[in-house]
Image (cartoon, rainbow, N blue to C red; front, top):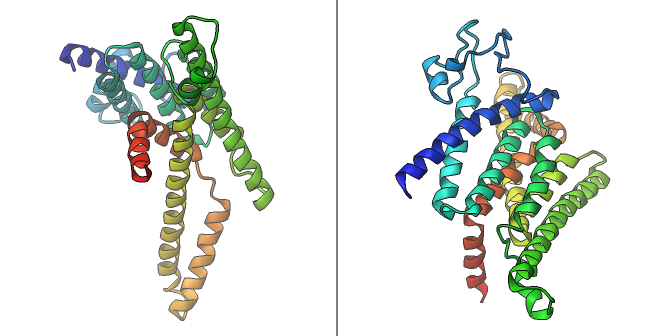
Length: 307
């Protein structure tokens, strides 16, 4: 990495991370992200420009509003640093190319969706739908090189130049990835609804996976869904186990036997399992970022185990 380019990209990442915090706070509320000045969520007073410097202002103010002294969530600091680190990681991985721009945009959108879903259980259309469109458009500039690009050229003789044919196959890969990602999540949600009689995944997750598929293509989209399902299942099981242990400990003080306390604790854990709304977009977004950087290497390693 060139240190000057890396430093510049890091600073740009901090700035975009600051804007992303605005999106995370305002989009679920239906507020504009451009027309209004940043203000303290508690006292509503506008934030001065010198208190709106990424990272530094939060550290100088020690995570509190200058005016009302209310706490400012550490999420603002974390999002700014993560966005900057992600931009630099893209530059380190893809170099000073259009691919870096493409995946910086992708990472920016995913971070916004991950944190918004974690806080509000919402995946705003103003992030997913533009992301889907950008993923498809970027496929014309930065080849996806997935299933269609690998197999169709040998089967079809298109009356186009090699460069145009490559772009068209890349576009097809992007569209197929979007369709697969959306349909898989939609189908899983429909099955869950019939099985449990309640909604398991909303249309926000469907649009998120359509966006992921448009950027990553079919193979990495499948990997993302599989890894997110595994991570989400582990998180859910861990949550149920922790609740059971804590409630058992609490009930053991009031009930006569440990067996009765365990039974009551398990009933509480089952209630959590039935009614807790897991922000699955957090796992889908996180695994999509992981697939972006190590997905192809993992698939290559997995293929070598069998061939």
